[in-house]
Length: 313
Ligand SMILES: Nc1ncnc2c1ncn2[C@@H]1O[C@H](COP(=O)(O)OP(=O)(O)O)[C@@H](O)[C@H]1O
Ligand SMILES: NC(=O)OP(=O)(O)O
Image (cartoon, rainbow, N blue to C red; front, side):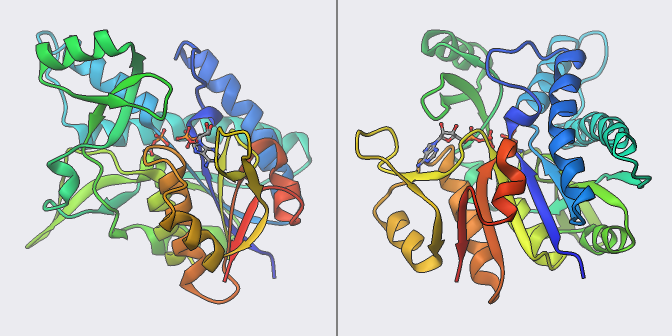
């Protein structure tokens, strides 16, 4: 039987720092990403693809706020849904094209996905999710004072607007995603971590927040019973002593070893921290579960155990 792999794609797969967020730029980046993913499909892996939306949902929010006197602004959960729609559209187009070029005729579907969160999550008091463009410290502080935004530093890369990022509790559409993947479709799902919703007495209601996609990736991997959960970003490995002269790449490691590094405070809160937390949670979920953090350009080598940080029990 083929291995089921959930791939969580970082921001770089769609928009790199310093690039202008035009449709063309984002589509070209996704075309590059699709080449690597199509190769995995050709190699026989069953893929569920999820992606971030931090830059995009932040930009859509700005558009809504700037145009609010002409067109009513929509709530942040609806903007998450918009981002899933347009990013998913780019993935479907690009992947289908790459698969055809490899002689494969596969269904690629994008599923609007909701993720249950708690309205009492601590992050509503102290927002942690960076979205939208980067600003200098001075610009960010001015915007915070003028518009009442929360702002903060994003992993040493500049300042960004911060919005609440509650923990994902459950992926509502997980069964449908699993059925589609097992039926042979390539599924793009839970983009941006899923649209945040909270349970009500008769269903769900939208919650204004942006979920961390790596945390949702763990939930999704567990719920679709994936063999491998891969977090792809722009570094080939997780490092200890990151940025110091004695930094060291982690290769094949046990949960126990990584937990020791977490306890030492090795991984930054806004960047590598959530990835390591999500990977550890998946690796711990059952014997045989494998979590990989690595780079998109080495994705096939990582699945062969030859690249990336590979964590298991
Ligand atoms: N310990 C570490 N090991 C490797 N990279 C790290 C570490 N700590 C911070 N980073 C940074 O984390 C970045 C990846 O996180 P982030 O940019 O948030 O991911 P993405 O947007 O791809 O999901 C890397 O580019 C690297 O600069
Ligand atoms: N939602 C989310 O985690 O997006 P980014 O990965 O783009 O920050």
